[in-house]
Length: 165
Ligand SMILES: [Zn+2]
Image (cartoon, rainbow, N blue to C red; front, side, top):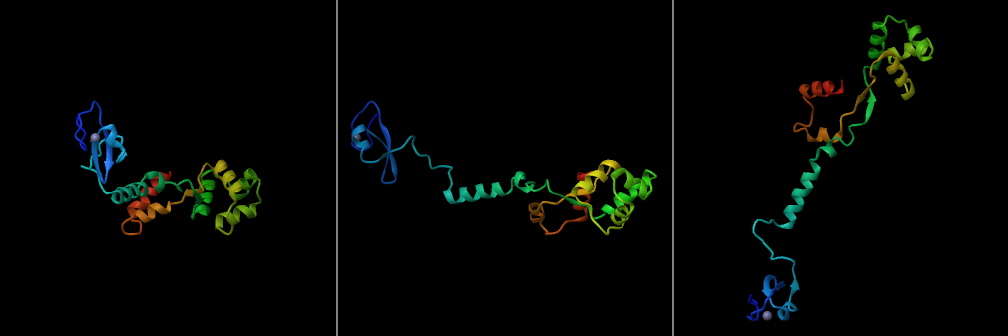
């Protein structure tokens, strides 16, 4: 092999970067530059700034980010109707449900009229005894942002409801 700097014939050359270009040089000339592991191939590579932006955009769009907060559940708005419907389906009076979950009739009445909201413990008892769900998964904020129009279509809402069940 021939040193590209001094022209000497040598058994091995090193790739060194000298003033912006990579040359294959002999051991003596290697000290004039910084040794590089392999010849730099510029073809097909893109400026670091653009590569960084693409990488950042890819990160933003990963499903992991979109569903990061999907585990959050909130009390369904129609929880009073859900309780009443499930109770009536079983042929129970408000007192019957109260006895099963160890709550006063007045509590059941207030729940079914929406006057009060059940706490987590009560939600679990009602869900267990009536075999219903009172909580709904909250829509992740990231998904709302991703919606092009900025608002959900009726189709979206139906889809979300289906996935919940
Ligand atoms: Zn040389």
